[in-house]
Amino acid sequence: HGLLQLLISPDVMNMERMLMAEAREKQKLTKLFYEAGPKRVKALIADYLIRLDRDGALRVPDPVLATHVFTSLFKGSDICLRFSMNIPPKPRRDEIERYCGHAVATFLAAHHP
Image 1: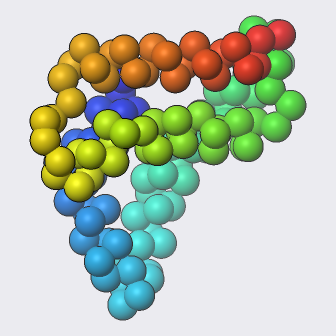
Image 2 (image 1 turned 30 degrees about the vertical axis):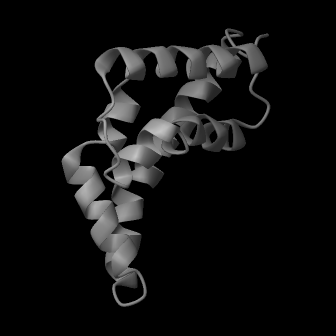
């Protein structure tokens, strides 16, 4: 839930909109944002998947690729897309919880040991 809530937070959405609008002129700023935000979060998730694989809880042969797939389940969601385009209605808490539960269950099924 936390990842999707972060992705649709007004601060992140406003920053992302601004960076996308000025990506060509502000490449240094977009790179700093990526490295401080998405890249850092993905590294933490990949590290966690490495530990889960090592402990036998999941089978994750390529943690970096699995991290990209996992985060895409959230960033690529209709909830995130609608929110980024200001298309009402705002996602309800139960919609977010239901979506996140399904996304995580799908990911876990793909990496079941």
